[in-house]
Length: 274
Length: 286
Image (tube, rainbow over all chains, first blue to last red; front, side):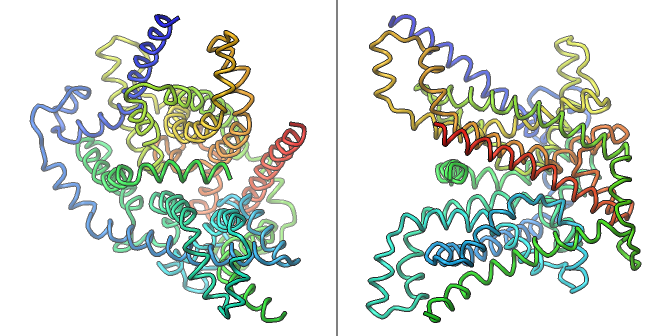
């Protein structure tokens, strides 16, 4: 029995190591080939680089206009996520605490909107926002609020159920306004949900390609995915430079992942289970 | 009383306005546009259901729809099986299980566009290099044929989403009551019996959640399609999302593309609602 268990464990470890290597191999190939010369990459794609050519990185970083691109992505993501958090938590609070016909209608609207795929609203959305000159960064942030609202309101609404209403009532008796109750009492208690909402929206907005490609695809305001698309089209035959560019684009995400790993994984399972 | 209502509307207004202007209004406009010959520039004529008739006769659209269905069925099955397998693996207690969890989930942090580019390199260069080294035939030019292009897309999708689905299954596996398993141990149950008789029924709700997420992610796939195969060769690996995009923004047939988009919505809504309906019925039974 004990012997059998040990064999099983060893087998699991071997299987785990094998799968882990398979899963990580694309990153290995990307990273190792980003340091090679064009000729070396062609002759020996799978091996380690003989010398490390950091000039691939220098060239790609210049071509990607990396500082500017990174800041564009950062500003759009941070501003959008902050706005989503503030307004979704307010709505989630109001809808959960009010029992009326309209609160039910609003809630249903948010849930029903989750069924509508982006492609089904994309064409009129761009036409309408084009007409009112909102195909720019403020317009994009506003669109992220519209698209991100459903899931965020849904999560906040769910979390509100766990916060006893007596707290509100006690504060009202003390003469607090709704805004004070929300900012001083309720919002701090929603903090775990805020982390989940923030992370889920960051992962989506940071990586989004299609919407920004339709709204802000101009030199100067491009985000990382947009620049990456142009960059890759330019370098498909120069894989060593393309791989360096991809590595540069991924580094911020990997750093973020290793810093926030626990919260991200918890957030994903929480967002799904609710 | 009126005081109470005012705060409710003030608090809900910002997101409601955004939802209305960004999703609901364009959606309604879209239904109207789908009955016109709108090309994005000139004023459009009402054409009745002609766009819908054309869509159902369009071999490009039907091909994309069929490709998307095939891709989704295969991917959803593989993602859920592998995701569950990975969840069982990393919840087994051994050194390194947590590192594995980190590795399996990692692809999900990176956008589909960039993942598609990484894999384009792998299918074009690394696969043929691997074929040369090991002598396995058929590893060159995976993105050049429809059939291998299909599997290339499936591989990327499975590699990316299995780790995501794994996380969902882990949370259900960890919810399994340990005393049930201990009791089964005392009764001399094998590992297989414990899995199928105890764990599996308890993680069934996780299956529904995963199905819903993989379904919608597979059907709406665009980024990976764009960066990996670009729809090629000859649009044979084009999925619905890309077909709609190209009809609208490459061919400028906005009204026609919108009709395709409305059909796409109906399609997704029917599948999702059916699934939710079946699930809720099951949950009542259980």
